[in-house]
Length: 445
Image (cartoon, rainbow, N blue to C red; front, top):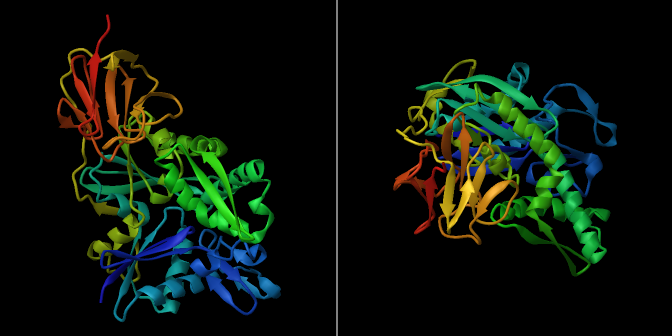
């Protein structure tokens, strides 16, 4: 008997059992007259049978019927039932109980309907928790925490705070900034690049369109560490290749990125400081973490794909039991809230010096990292050990000069690791990488 953590969001159902991911099932159904498919089997045919595909049954969960394939009556609740039953059969053993992690965008009547579906499936529910609370309560973070998830059809920002108990305060939604529309724009981008180079259009036939969409997540992950990559699809025994740049992806998604940046900006209380926790889905979007990390008062951390589900299972005793299960929107923090690193600084730095060249520090963020990118930056050439693409940022904020660490490797100020953010002054030394690059901070008269 075990507690199975199950995050339910329109993009996928993610299940964790005994600390390991046991399912990540896409929120897609193929409503064929004689053979209903859900999850991975449906996603593999979504572009091959678009008329039969459905992907809104979790975001628009309801019992209202609509005309499915061959005109048979089906509801989003029917499809959610089939999907949940499929996942539960695949991951559970006799005696297991589920702890559900639900997005803040799910309404109470939808959560009640979900619990009814779970009972019908035969899935015992030991507790229900807000997914953002579960995913972030274990972070070493600041008092205020923002959790951003980019779902299939929308983006959801959850604002939380608390010194010892992290509580959900409010939920904001960007209804048109979801993965589906962005993936559509990026598929079109790749298609146009391929047509220019090879005269072959992968969107012209269903099989290569399916390939393109299947490979997009992997291409996006690769672009996290590269400026460009070659993308390929196969058709008729031939391989068609094109080169796409990271910057092209960000430009194609600019309208949605602007919405996400504004969503986060409005979530900040008094300009921060705050920790922004990005779901794995949000972090997959090229350069989004860097863009949001440049907002004043924010430190950015990226969550694992299983963060919400794993925490739900691990903290089942705190979340439940309750009959009927009630939604938990607060959990004790594993680590006390971490304040910004404060130091006694005599003279705030106005310039940073590296390689004999001084770079001015002002209200416009100055990014340090390898490779090129948008905005003001000190490019350190090719990838180096312990240096991220956007490793840290220097900027002036209300009379202080700050360094903000965005890397998983660490930024070091006078030999000590920066905990998110620190104030810097003339005479300080900053190091990134190992053995690293050292920067001198100075003040100009």
